[in-house]
Amino acid sequence: MPEPIADLSYRTYSGSHLAVGSRWLVIARMGWRTAFKKKSFWVFSGFAAWYYLVMIAFLYVIEQLDITRRAGPMAEQFFGNVPWKDHFLTGFTYGQIMWLSLSLLVGAGAIANDNGTNALLVYLSKPCRKVDYLLGKWMGGFVPLLVGMAIPTAFFYLYGLLNFREYGFVSNDPWLGMRLLAMVTVAAVFQTSVILGVSSLFNQGRMAGAAYAAAFFLLTFFSFLMFIAWSVSQGTRRHHANPQLGDIAERLYHLSFDGLQIGWAKVVLGTDGSAPFVGKAGGMPQMHAPPPAFVLVPMALLSLVGIALAWRRIRAVEVVK
Image 1 (cartoon, rainbow, N blue to C red):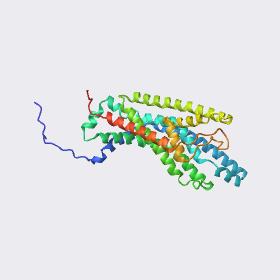
Image 2: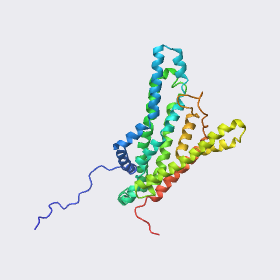
Image 3: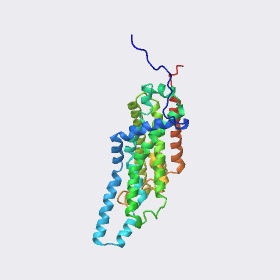
Image 4: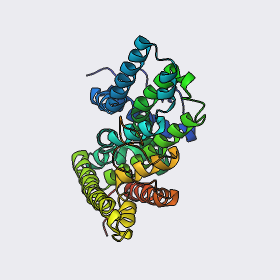
């Protein structure tokens, strides 16, 4: 016969206890570790900086030519007139595909995979409330997405701060750093909220990612059509064509995921943008910045809808009606 267990006394848990308000942090940390350990996260974030790297190389060549020629006042005039805000806007615009990739990476499977594996039964059977779970998942996606967006922008900002401070990089707009922080923060809040809502509707992260990407590209195609209509209106405006077509197309262009974020960047930076390497003196006209409410209201509504969908779908058991 097997020997009886010597110690049959009840042993209570003697480890650390988290406060009720910190339970979401356990779930968030899991999201952070998963995102930051993936090499693709850093690859996407690095690729998003390609425009800034090209501009750095361009500015470096111009600076070296001025040093070689000892241009002096010419260098001050050139670098003092560089539209820094426009370059940040262009870099943010050209990074939209990478922001989409980061959103899919950190958020597509956040809730969908838990739905597929019935992990919600485990989460909600413990001292973990729905609000703890949702906040943990949201923060687990928001922080990596904010970091991925901020790295390219901060890199170019620090480069300008260290090299072109004497040319008015800071004095022209002392609040540029705060504007850039607001630009990427609001965009990260928006994308995190929407992707979590989409993720909660599926049982597989791949399906959620495919649905979100399909909606993104469908609306982007709509924005592209509006851009063509606006471009045509700019060419016919000289011939006294109806200017309302261009104005309507200019507003509708921003009614897409990337269009809303680009419109928000224009609003917070206070610029319409300019042609890369040419500036405001050349290239075709740029779309005007939309009214703040035209981008902030849709972004807020879509964010709230995403969070509401996720809240509704977070259930420990399947409800049979």
